[in-house]
Length: 158
Length: 166
Figure 1 (tube, rainbow over the protein chains, first blue to last red):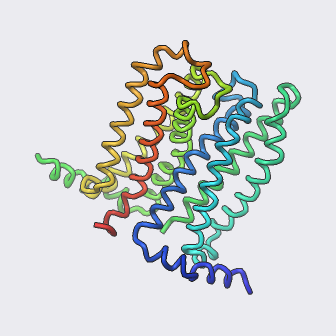
Figure 2: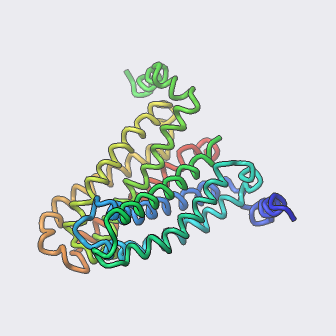
């Protein structure tokens, strides 16, 4: 079974057919996805700005990182399921969109980076990580999430 | 001149026609508007959650509000500018849109909420900035703020759907 066939099967499975036939379900799920984006934006931005030496510069990096972590996870718990539903609605259309595949790749990269390299740098004691490495990690994280948001917006273009 | 005829006139101005007719200009402005949600609503959510005593509790409230408000204001400025252009792209249509009207009313409520917070709990922030549970006035401001921003984002997302529903 090819990937396109899997996408086709998902899109035309009965729950998704029902979802598409509703006039308000798609925009409602898209709205929740957008609310998750706001929360994710806040949780990522305060930490990445701190890594770059901006925003909350007084508290230690580890404090900002630890405090933001549950909200990052919570927003991902909103974004991923709603995102999957939005994807399944028009899966076969997205199969042919470059922006969609860029987003999938960037999401996987961002998640791997956030929960490995970035997490280690965040939890390290102040002074244990050189300032340049912190800034680099903050910049990489911001670029990955910005790519995801931008690609996500492009997917929805007519 | 009635409101309707004013918006009719505005709709016919070259700028509005350009925004409306150019696919990429409109979508570009829309992209900026949506992407800036991350900055503005993201910062607003972090501040409101701190006022509720739910997030960023290791960081004193005064420090957090003082450091993040400039970013929120920067985001808000971009949102208002891009939002105004989105309105200008189709003034008559937006004016007649129920979700757009609801969004404006909610925005005024959100502004009032911020103003009330600044007149009350924020004046005494030095007394409670280290409290894990901020005073009731701060928690109310945070809770009301979160609900209003969520409603504003939802109303905005629904603006293009009015024609399908009503």
